[in-house]
Image (cartoon, rainbow, N blue to C red):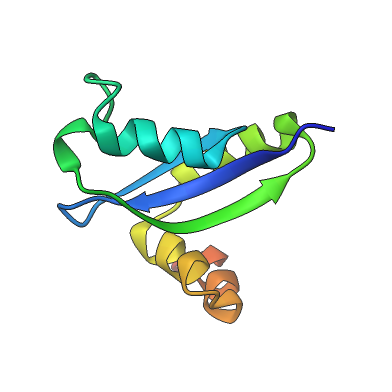
Length: 97
């Protein structure tokens, strides 16, 4: 099975970019070299890889990438920092009475 990666980059402006790829080192090179001039990261270089995880199922990797892209900055930072307790707490919603 082919390996896939979901990754998070920290951009020079402090924002985060989440992506999916089958070749992490090649994708990092393309991001940092400005290979894609229309990409979100083009004007936000240099970039730092702050998180990645491996998948053997590309469909699951794409699903997780889409999920993470919807997360708040705080929740992404909890994932980046391996703060899984905080990650769970940030997933809870509080509803007013």
